[in-house]
Amino acid sequence: MTFRTAAQNASRPRRAALSGLALAAALTLSGCQISSPVTTDMNYDPADGVSVDAGQVAVRDLLVVSEGNGAPGTVSGLVVNNTSEPTEVTVTLGTGAEAVALQPTLSVAPGQSLRLDGQGPDGSGTPVQVPAVEVSPGGSLQLVVQTSQGEADSGLAPVLLPEGPYSDIAVTTADVPS
Image (cartoon, one colour):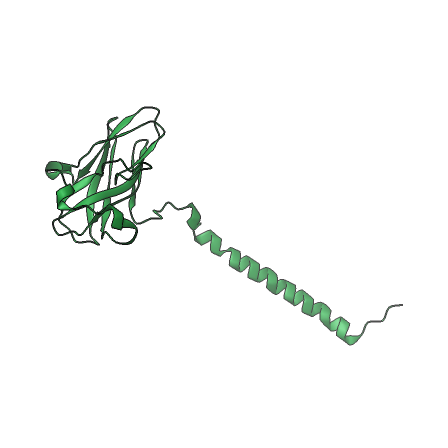
């Protein structure tokens, strides 16, 4: 014969209440998932620049490095050719009748990537340059990426000062082709 003390009999309802409370808390907290999207499933630009997709040619971290207010600038970003053919990529400042094609036009091999700022493994690239950036740093410029396959896309690229990680890609007036 087993005898229970008053303390043992009292703990059974307490355990049941705590179990019920834990279950209610779990159900309440899991309900947050229903009304909140999973943020890791959302697309975003994890860098200073913007992303542009011209067909199967992707440009990541597209931005302009310049002192602004009429000073020249360098376009920075990475062009990735996800096609099986070489492609020519042209970056244009603005849209419509006032659009200006920036130089140089880049040739990107199939399955390869190329930096717009001209910096590559061997340092022999030519940067895509803006002759005169008319906005102040902190502003943005409409840049259009056009491929030789006829695909195009645009984005508002931020203008950043040639400081920190961008200090080595600054351009001077003498560097800009006329």
